[in-house]
Image 1 (cartoon, rainbow, N blue to C red):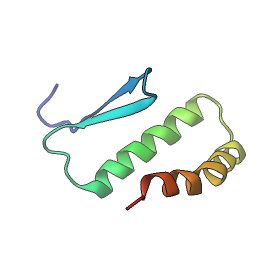
Image 2: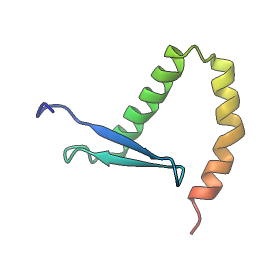
Image 3: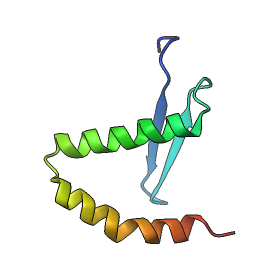
Image 4: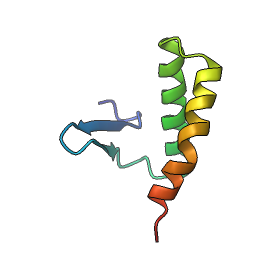
Length: 73
């Protein structure tokens, strides 16, 4: 790994159906992390030919449920 590159490593646990994320030590800004992850997802979806309408539907259908599951206090 080059010293000037910030990295995120994703590992999918097939047994637990979870994704583990490891960030390089110089990647600490949550806004930057969110930007990188969002951009990566959108780039991947576009490369796979997913339309904007399908992306909208995915987000519209899943986002509220995701928030409710991950913001439990």
